[in-house]
Length: 310
Image (cartoon, rainbow, N blue to C red; front, side, top):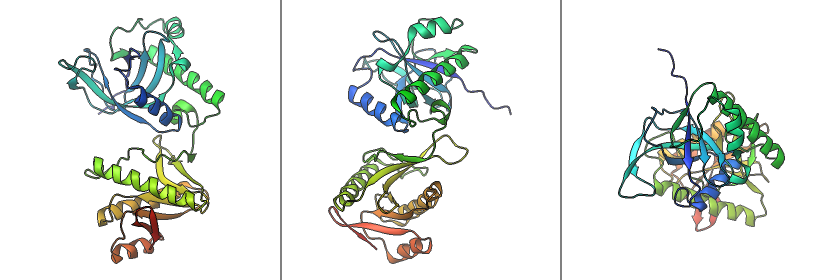
């Protein structure tokens, strides 16, 4: 069966705080500038257009400072109906997506530039979820890559974007330590709100602990060969070249998952780091033996903010 070609859609934001919470917007700009993607649920108008995972999406800000300010990909299949963002008593179609690039409106790809170049595309866009047909889709993608590339050069930021094809050759390397980044897992049941909160707080306390010992800590972004989706290490202790992967419990399931992640992560370094699991409690001896057999250490919280290596 022939693979379905990806499509391109434009969604709209009127620039209001109700349409995009200003704190969330600022956080998403910051995260995507560091190479993270920012998941979001966005309204998709009435046409729908059969959106599928992997389809490209652009965010067009209307009103003042009119133009494209974001790009990413759709994660959901079709649309889901939720209360309308501005009319709570009304239901509206939404998609789940992630921004790979989100920039301040002052850095937008201007509406006038798009209108003069994309002559086959009808402007203005009247509703969110408008499909962009060929050849306008390729032209818009090319214009955006060029625009974002110039911003990356201007700011000296090779991480700007979240996608190798958009930012031009990003690779593995340091990034800001993200103490409260929402984690995600490949196994169902490991990404509960409680688990994410426990892990992020554990990472934050351990980072403070290492910093008090005069260690330099950072995040680390790994881009495996042949992929466009980066992996993010919880903590990289630069002073000792040591990676830590945090988990919300010392259970066998959590330790085994952390073990696999660390074995994968350390392959992304030219200078092979030491690696350890970071846990809220000391695990049973059998799990410590399992980690030791794979040259993986274990650090756990002995009391609030005090850590010990098993």
